[in-house]
Length: 308
Ligand SMILES: Nc1ncnc2c1ncn2[C@@H]1O[C@H](COP(=O)(O)OP(=O)(O)O)[C@@H](O)[C@H]1O
Ligand SMILES: [Mg+2]
Image (cartoon, rainbow, N blue to C red; front, side):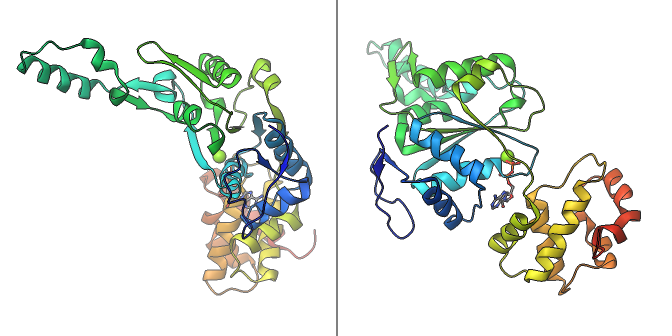
């Protein structure tokens, strides 16, 4: 992909120039912010390079740090279709790439038996019987799409190897139909919650970026961006409280979505500053594990306290 200057159109890169990329990291960062995604410089640089150099971007980090949202914001910014492949244990090629629509084929076979005309079994394996899954859609859409391979760590080794093959070619040969290849690869974002290590071979193909929980000021800004009705002082209280809770030895550290939910919940109650009682009453917005709640409850004074 060659770097060309994208024309801006109402804050979006609306023109469908396939090679359109960003003039600078800052421009990308501002574009994402306009999509209400606040990326720090490291992340913005990784995205910038991945888009400009046509490399898949592998994002790792704890649940809720904003990995999936990168792909959504980027698709929206580039004005491309977001094609999402959600991974899970046992996922295989037929769910990820394509499969044949057996029930439709069966109906067609029955219809064939009714007519006396010579029928061709090969007709049963034509495009109208093909069920397109996300990877095939992404191959077909090519540079008109952002492909999100979400939570790849949930899939098993074989699937990872299969994905690697697809990523290196962006083409597939369907025996009955032939070879389908992308003219230009889509932008690819892969996420992992790191419940297991991904393989080196896959990592070698990708640019890698680890996303941490945001720093206090950044998380405040995110609350202000995503929930503008939350007053600034309350946003600070909630972001501070969440930061402290994350420091506890709990099973599920709250993500950014929980921070936003908590701020929203407290603001909705009409409370202006986060105090211990309010924190107690709304704890379910931020901690969703009973043991974690029990651990945090006796420490709420410390969580909402005004100094460390
Ligand atoms: N940097 C960010 N800027 C704006 N919103 C964010 C950011 N990070 C996280 N969020 C918010 O947190 C939510 C959860 O993020 P998500 O991408 O689903 O997390 P992950 O995929 O890492 O589990 C998003 O829907 C978004 O509202
Ligand atoms: Mg996610």
